Length: 137
Figure 1 (tube, rainbow, N blue to C red):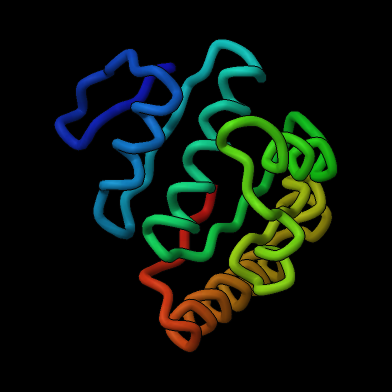
Figure 2 (cartoon, helix red, strand yellow):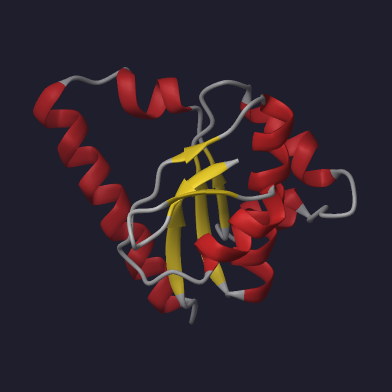
């Protein structure tokens, strides 16, 4: 998996190492993660989401594009990095939204305004529940 660090260098990292590095960054940072296949992406987001929710006390919004939201839920619920997806979704600590529906069904100004209101609401929810932040993946 390739990632660009804050020094603008490209690095080749394992999925778990990349998720730990990304988790340690300051709020407001944007990264582009390049992965060779869906299995690597699944491994990365499993580590990252678990770490953000359980160790960094954050709310995570994940918007998959290459697989269904149900497949993401199954992936997050299985293996050694498994989490209680339904519990976190009920608590609104984890939000999983299809990227196609989230970003491409509404056009122009309306989509931008709705997205801004959503992010603002999530930041307020994070503060209300004593969370350390809100991550979007």
